[in-house]
Each structure stands twice: as structure tokens, then as C-alpha cells.
Image 1 (spheres, protein in one colour):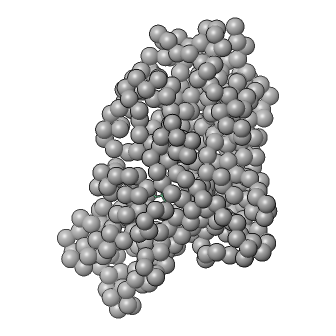
Image 2: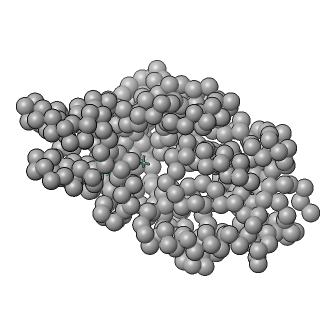
Image 3: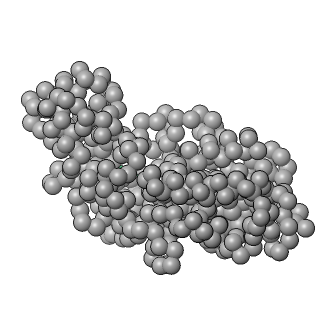
Length: 383
Ligand code: UDP
């Protein structure tokens, strides 16, 4: 019989926080099974040949308003302050994102921009963050025109490309992540804490997992070692009585018995360039390009001094478990139908009292990194 008190599947933020808590606060022995050959899930980062820290699975910029998350993680890393900036290329303009008053003045001549600014502030208040779908509801014709312009030029095509469905079919919370901001603040996030782990996310997660009592097995297909049947869990052919913290996809865990849950995947095209800088902001979004959504230049994050630079271009695509180019799930797809299907898997999971589905994939939620950490801390507290 296994001597482990818990098995954690997946060594991303959710799994690593849970493993750390169980080992350090409960004295449990924890086995972490990770299918990849590295820690940190999609937060995995490394230094490339030019000495630039890159994020293998797309840019990860830590930000939070949750002091408990900040203080918890600060036990495991030093931080480099960093405030993310994004520009949107529309025609030959580069507009600050989220669309804010600076964007407004770049878009329109000063007099017209001023008039719109006054209308916006009268209606919503200085500093307000107005979701684009809410702004579109306005009965003020000039604001309505502005809202339609932003929606058409920033959201419609990007969203279609990112999610593979129309902007009106995706849950409104998704577009509300990037509201129209009635201030001159050009930062992408406005959270109290914004920083990058000094030696990277992978090192941070490595420290979470280096607690006494935690064993990490990389390149392990957990589903080859685990079996779930009639309310019981089996590990390596023996009955397992501990907790199973599962951060993978629930449809896969339950052999797709209610059908596949849709996910979006991404292709990343990295380029190393022999000149110091490619663009003026860390990320430039291309809402109206044909095939890609954004380009990120990593050097802006830690400001490494070198004569070359590394960029990554993101090409969204459907997830396909059978295609090695498409088999990494990044985002659950937020539609009512998909939530309903997920509900069936969740009900099935509830028949296994030892099983705790945890994180973005297993809970089919659009967690940011800090949400994932808080969610894991809460889940530990409830255990
Ligand atoms: N979005 C958009 N245009 C943009 C930026 C964002 O339409 O230039 C929409 C799009 O649907 C996207 C969502 O807003 O999926 C959330 O954007 P965010 O930057 O938070 O996405 P993430 O970084 O999580 O991929």
C-alpha cells in the first residue's frame, strides 16, 4: 500500500501550492506526478541563448490585489517590480491598451477627444473601468459611436481569432478583462502588486516543491498509474486511500464519457533577432491581423542588456488531443453549453470523495496565476 498521503497530478501553480501546504503544514508525504520534463506547467520560463528570460508557453505577468497571495508567494521568491504595457496596432496607429483616455487622444483630434472625455466622465465617473459591452449599451449617440469603434477595431476580430467563436458568443466576463479605462493610466493591470519572480516562475515552483516530504516524478503519465472506479482510487495497481489532487482535464480523467470539453490552444513562434529592440512595448496586440493575435518581446520585462532580442508571436488554434502541434490546452472555452458539459464531469468527480479537481483545467475556469494560488490555498484550508 502506498505510503503517500496525497498524490498531486500536475506541477503548475495549483498543484505546487497544494503540495507545499500539505507537506509543510500537515507533514504529509506527497507524490507529484508531472507529465512534462519540467516543472511550472505553462508558467515555465528559462534563459535563452541571448541571456534573455523567455516564457515558453506565452507571456506570464504576475499581478494581484490579494495580499495573502502576495505574502504567501513572497516566502518563496524575491520580486523584480514590473508593470505590463500593451499597445494595439490598428492600421498605422499604436493605441495603449486597455483603451483609455490616452488612446482616445491618439485616435481623435484633441477637440473631439475632449468632448468625448467629458461625456464619458459625466456618465461613468473619472477613473471608471467600463466593460466594452456595457459601453455599447449607452443611449448617448457619440459614446455609442466610440463604443462601436472600439468593439469593431479592438475586440471583434481578436476575439474571433482567440476563441474561434464570435465575440457575442463568449461569456461577457472574458471581454470585461480588458475594460475601457477612464484615466490616463497606460498599465495593462492596475493591481496593487505587480512583479516578476527574480529568478523565474520555474525556480519559484521548484522551491514550493522542495519541501521535505514532497517527491516529484517528471515525465509521468499519471493516468497510466491511476485508476478511478466505482468511487475508489487505485495507484500503481493498489487501492489508494489518500487524497488525489488533480490539476489536469476532467474529461480526460473520466475517459471522455460525456464527450470532449473544448479548449483553445496556441502555437508560439519564437524568433531571435540581431538587433537590440523589436517594438516599444512588451506586448503589441494585432486585433485585425489574419492569423496571429499578439507579439511579445521578453527583453522589456527584465531589461536584460544585450544587442539581440527575442520575440514570440501567438497563433490561436483549437485544441486537438491527437495532434502534437495542438495538444496543449491553454484556455477553457466559456460558453453556456460547455459549462453544462463540464457540470456533468464535476458531478461525476463528486462521487470520489478523495478527489479534488483543482485549477484552470480541472475546474474549467479562466484563472489568472494569483487566482490559481488563492484557489489552492482555499482548497487546502477546506480540506
Ligand atoms: N481582447 C481583445 N482584443 C485585445 C485584447 C483582448 O478582443 O486586444 C479580448 C479577447 O477576447 C481576449 C480577452 O479580451 O481573450 C481577454 O484578454 P487578456 O489579455 O486578458 O487575455 P490573456 O492574456 O488571458 O490571453
